[in-house]
Length: 388
Length: 132
Image 1: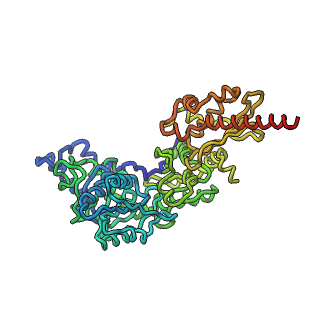
Image 2 (image 1 turned 90 degrees about the vertical axis):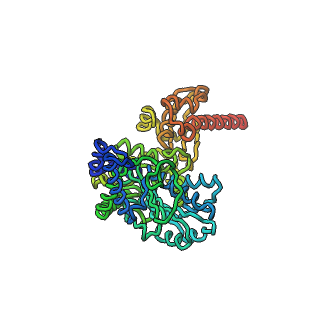
């Protein structure tokens, strides 16, 4: 059966050019970059090259890039590091109710530790209200943490405006850019962010590598203590293979972004228009314009998302639901709930996230399969009959 | 994450639909939680001669609905009452732990349908007494 992968926001395959780049580090270049001998030296320079490439993707200086084990670690480092550093100054954190669990649950943990956290709401497009943000700021606010783009809906937040507000008030601004990096341009200088997290496996590097941008002058207490690696900011022998891979993935992303994002946007529109044309009672969740090009989140009314995903899977099509069953909780997606979407409708939501190896044929195959699946599940659904 | 048996029932659910002149109807679950099951039974001489369901829910919800209809068809009411959610899950070679509570409601729907039937029966008998 032909396999079609439409879950690039969950993870991506490794780019063939990245695989080529890391091969010598699997076979020959094994040294510990901290060693002063030849084996260490020959590896060290590639780490610094990778750092430059990561910096270039987000317009940072190489010394502002710290490698981490994941986007989640980068978020934890940013948030816990900031509140540790500034706990004398205040105890208030502002974030949003639609963050990824890496940020959301870190903030909830800090709430239990005695910090006060404001979780900002969003409108029906999943968009923030900047006035609400402004009025949440107090003289005790030490951190604002807002994601660049939402992982479930793809909605992009007004990061530059938030950056300006934070900078004016002298508050540290962290941005979880895991779903945006490599997909849309990011310029940390223009955006006025102090901290910015990215993750390699979301854009064609392997799992187990991420990085945190720390603006020059911002001092963070480390999360991981140990050796002197990463200029004492993150201990632990460097994940050389991951770092080299992340560097290459950043280089490729920067090189291909403009062309690739246009192509993928075209595919997403083909998918959305096709679904709207062939299936009744569907809604597209997320902002119509301010959205990363590869993501669409669609509610199929009267049916439940997991049963739709399982049926697609039986046809070789991989997509995902942010809802209840897969995430192991009873509640529908916290993101869709925050947007005020009817919980019953939210249960029937599916995320399609596109990427490098998707083609028009893939989209057309989905459009061929999907209406029949929806029809069959609706014919089984007691909610459908009730509403007809 | 699902057993082969769950997937088999999910792919080819048995007894989907409704019985227009059902003897009893059971409706359980909450759409907010992602599961609603509706079970229709036809009872003749204390035997469940026909059973159908409609379900809004995940793979486990659909498979358990299908399985309970298979388990109960041809059984008398006393036997049917003994079927539990656990029986259904076991007949499917188990369910993932998280699904045991949220999506394993099919036997509850069956019991609700039997209760509905018995209530209607009682009302009918009382009605007969009243008219005689």
